[in-house]
Length: 415
Ligand SMILES: Nc1ncnc2c1ncn2[C@@H]1O[C@H](COP(=O)(O)OP(=O)(O)OP(=O)(O)O)[C@@H](O)[C@H]1O
Ligand SMILES: [Mg+2]
Picture (cartoon, rainbow, N blue to C red):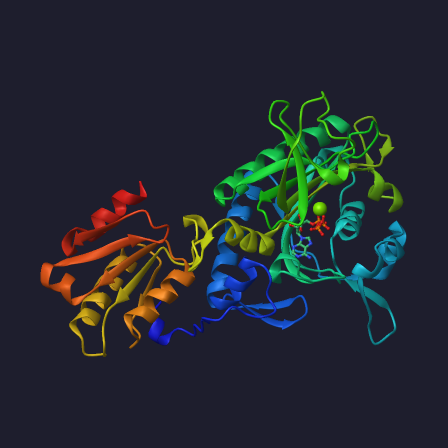
């Protein structure tokens, strides 16, 4: 991508109505635009990052054996009345009517829809266990939308729903999803922790949350490393871990949630299958969510400095930015930069070329703000020495690489 033709608009000033660093940086770097409270447009670079997150989540969900589906965002009220959630879900549910006066909601989650599909389509034990997932836009009419895409009203979620004949099968898939989540959040480069979200009572529902550790997080987590125990403080009674160990506390952002639902939905929606003995049973369900758009904000909370974002490689919208220190369109620095740009693109890199007629200071500030991991600077001095300056957004070091060795050098860095 060449910045001279790219619709990038960045801001020096910190937006007044954004409290959280990630929100400020996402607005300043032009990743998102606010439309209304809790509603954001994804601009080209922001969308590129969102797709990277989606891609990793999709790859690992496919690998886990789940099947991707796509369900409507708009859901008929009757389904929600069957489970009692038309009322119970409260004001988070955005309700609407069509021209015939039939009621619908914009889906905040999809247990009802998937259970409706399964009760109509799956009849016997041979079709289970099964896990369906989607990556889709949700709407929740949050009482206090804030922090940008961290707590939005419209947001992107990966949601999965599994169906089982018995508890051991549900336990197995719950473990499988737990392992998949570990892989996903590790690949995304997040510093995270799995925490208990269930009350721990006998008969209580089993549930775990995945939290990205950040001081700005809305949740407080109590943990005890000796006992390998961590739980959302909402769930902790007293000041010690289950075996009396001392608790430490930290803050987190919930990016994922896995839940054993049991037969709550299959029963209330009369979803049955025949087991291998010919008995009609209510399948047990699990559900597994990941906040795709929230992950982007969480990653920025963990990876930034006073100058801007510092993308970890897997999320970076571009791997390399080439800063041409040209003063006008005729400069040799620009000609050389273009050559390197095409060469790197051919070698498979995602490259951004800053070929604007801007001052070096403006270009460096934007490069810092955008957070692209590797920066190549093409200057007059470099041209004289036949070298290009390579430095890293995380500030580790800086090196002059001879032009003809550049591609080899970059390749070696990646292995
Ligand atoms: N308003 C929101 N904006 C962005 N992401 C959200 C929002 N609400 C939920 N998510 C994401 O979707 C995931 C799955 O949804 P879930 O129903 O578990 O959310 P939740 O527990 O209600 O979230 P929270 O406690 O933060 O309100 C969450 O773990 C979170 O990452
Ligand atoms: Mg949750």
